[in-house]
Length: 305
Image 1: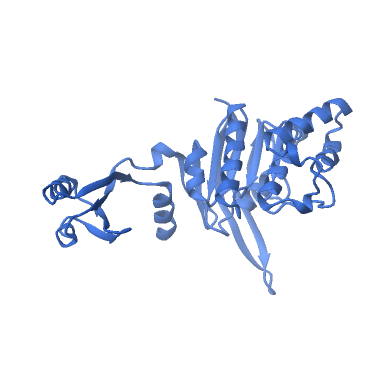
Image 2: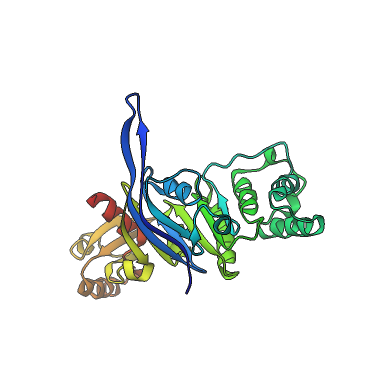
């Protein structure tokens, strides 16, 4: 599989404060992104995610390191012509309608009229804004603005798309809509570089991830390699069972009505809980083994650092 993005030993510092004290933001970042994958770039606020993306796109310049896009130097026209970008806080001309907004930005790519009109229609269809084509952006919700921003990032039919915190500030429905668009881009063979701290969504859609903390990449790789499949504990929801007896088997939490949530950490105690429910003529409503999640991995790494 071809490498579409390669970063080696990237360093970036800023002078901050009244005394302009130098602070190193990126400390030797190295990573690669393969064609056709959704790559998750994770880290707490201030870790260096946006700084990395701005360096890749040539919006700011690193002091040290090498960046290649499609095998070309990152500042070359060949590297830029097939990339798209949705920033974390995009600016919108809110007096324009959705169609006018996309038409305005399409002028950057010197599209012919017929091709431009067809492209705008297809993008509005992709982001599910066909019915809002003539609505001014000032009347858009946060989720709708994220989707029209996504459409703008795809105007030049890029092979590599950078999305900086596209899920931030969205409700569950808005996050699902953005996830669905990213999945469709992946199905079309596009590569997506996704910066986020919403770990549940990252775990659902990304092939590989890199975790950055304090300007350093602490861990990276395929999710199935990073996250252990070992069962950490089992959640059992029961009713009609003496809670005092359950406490001997694990950690009890009161549930709705007479239900009890029991977290069982020893495998042999799961069978004992089921036998107890049977002998007490109670009910077992659910039994769910819990393995390590991306959130567990992320929180553990950040606490260690």
